[in-house]
Length: 467
Image 1: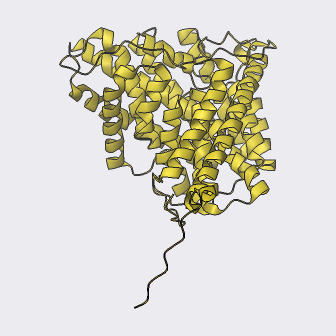
Image 2: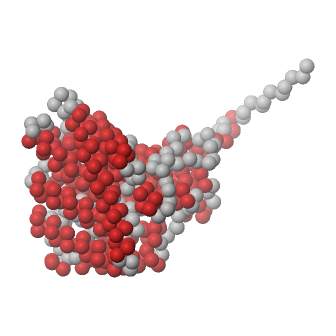
């Protein structure tokens, strides 16, 4: 009878198993991606600020308070010329260097993951922030988060040239970059982490989870060191869900936000399709689209006294949550204008994110919904801020497919943790209703129309190495 030899005990010096060594290395790379993304987000903030200040107000200032309204432009009634000129520059950069700098950014990352093994142009890391800074700085209606996410993802291309990353690790780091970009712009490390895990790379293995979380935390802390521990949006009055705020109210709000998200997705997609068909020349198409955006800015100024449509409309969203915008007619006008302006900016070929416009649109829809409930004596007026907050979560969840990250991100944006439960309920109902009528999100629909079929919130890694 032979006795099988026993395996030799592991030496103290080799305490980590091969998979653990791989995981630790991935975490370190995630931290590096988070650091670089955070630094890039800081530089991007100042780049947008100086372009915005010089172009709109004629002042050479290197910072911009996102919670303060922009002063009336030195251009006066000639303001629409400015975004049109900015649009021409963006198209030039896209046509001659990198077409991927157009659009919201996340769609391009998804396409890289599913069709090019996570490979992206290295030039995007520089050109995307520049193009978006020009779009937003000259008056476009788009968010800052898109270029930050794509910048974080494009960092992987630079790392790939240094250490030749395998496909599965390259894809993981793309997810780290996306989450880090959101975390850096919004100071929302948990929201950025959830977004990366459920929208970009639904891969819930331990080392993937940890590396992505490390990336978002590092990116957020880098920006906090420069700008302080900020909340991008104001905290609103909130109370736990009880008999005065029945859950049915938030389920109904989710339904309304789902319908609004479908309108938003269809409007953006239709604008893109029609403008490309009627105006095949990219320069003419985008210049005209941005000129129309400039006209909408003048209309907003005439109606409200402010340029509520510029950029991500953070100050406008804050005004909604604080109850500064109480006129339902004005709120409805701004809602329609923001929807059109964002669709024209992105759909005609601009560069920028759709998260921030979604916040404004979702809050505006929620407030109109809340005003109806107060008129029917169903909702107490002092809880309108909570309704607006939950509306933002519902719009983001429904339009982008970020079911888990939407309520978490909204809570981090406002610091209003008491509203987490109703925000989750609103997001869940909005996401479910939108999926009943439309299977594609605002990120996957453009890809599907180009023949790239990507299932929402789904990705299968070929390298199942247990991480």
